[in-house]
Amino acid sequence: MDRSPATFLALLVGGVLLVGYFVQKKTHPDGGPTTDPAVLASDFARVETAITAAKGKVVLIDCWATWCGPCVSSFPKLVEKSEKYGPQGLVVVTVNLNDADEADEVKEFLKQQRATFTNIQLKRDEASFKGLKKRLDYGGGIPHAALFDRSGARVWTGHPEDPALESRLQEELAKPAPAP
Image (cartoon, rainbow, N blue to C red):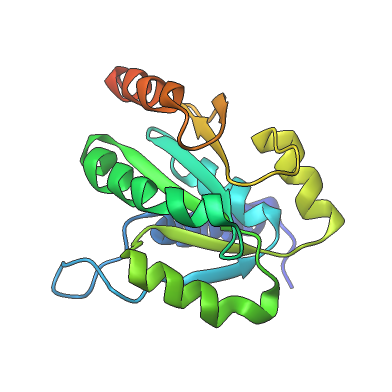
């Protein structure tokens, strides 16, 4: 295998573009929203890549599980935020903390909620939880949300129903996208 810097760079760019596709709103070939959300099983690197791929947009990440009552009750508001602010530059990514063998249950919940944004079912390993703690300021409780500005810097963390999230979200969306 060719190990030149150009090959590495080409593979890296290709990977970022592929993940960028999954970060965007899922649609059918006719352009309408899908009712069959994707659940991407992965480690924390995919979360980081989703943030990076959305540079120039505001990113809201929500950590949740189907067994978490407050997560389930707050999820419809997350879908509303995605629909309301998506056209203004919001990208929503959810990080599901269910066990891997519960992927079908997760997918069915997302379908019922009409969640058309990227959904990552995180591997529950030490490295992933370290990533959550470091990048999302995750302290172990869910639901937990983190907001990233257009440059990819974390600007807010907390409960997704905290009114401070809504005001900070509007504030970040009002800022212009950084120059390329």
